[in-house]
Length: 91
Image (tube, rainbow, N blue to C red; front, side, top):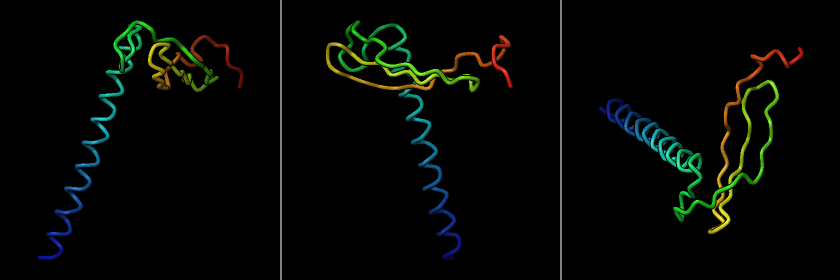
């Protein structure tokens, strides 16, 4: 009986963690969509700009930080930039 309850408990906890992570990724995606259109997710004004950008080299990702000039909202994203398909990376 205790084994069944323990298994049920861990299933509920694990399912909740998966749901929370998927929900977080969905919200982060919605914020990125607004930022790509130039809108701040917090104050809804067209005042968002790139504050910092670091290239990822051959990994194909870039770390980009955005900042709102109106309400000081900041957020960062790892964005894909295409990788080494152009042949510019040397091994």
